[in-house]
Amino acid sequence: MNQWDMNNDIERVLYSEKDIAEAAKRVGSQLAADYEGRTPVILSVLKGAVLWTVDVMRYMQYAEVEFIDVSSYHGGIASAGEVDLVVDLQTDIAGRDIIIMEDIVDTGRSLQFMKDLLEARGAKSVKVASLLDKKDGRVVEAHVDYVGFDVPKAFVVGYGLDYKQLYRNLPYVGVLKPSVYNPEHAGLVDTTDITPEH
Image (spheres, rainbow, N blue to C red):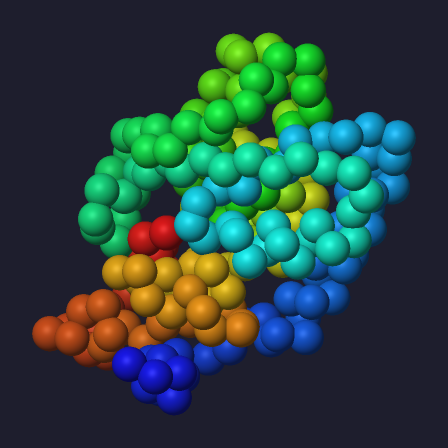
């Protein structure tokens, strides 16, 4: 699959490469100001938030980087409701300021799981910087401190977000055509309540 094929799978572009670059600069500059004189631990959530993390960090000052991977999808296209810790961070974060870098906050389950974990390990503070915030998808209370974009309910891919591990390398965020993930019901699927696996 080349990028042309992937572009053909996109119903519409929600946020362009330029839009995302501007959001990364805005969020990164705000983080730099808010954490001036401190060295926070940037906790990038694998795999989807890696691109967002790198682009936001370009505008920050001193910061350490760690990675974590949690999953609530277990191979499907909708959240299973249970969160598993797949990859744990390696740094002792007791007494540290943590910035969770997310690609998208939807149901809030994964974010709440991570915040509880970090607080139990003695984090001094925990803030969240997400590329996308899908507030309509919440099933648990979850607050995002720094938001790239408020995203509508749609099946979104690109710029780190995937479907079956594909589309992450698209430079924009777009809505995936229903025929791609449900070819037997092309055009008949209500995509409003479906979230991509990521």
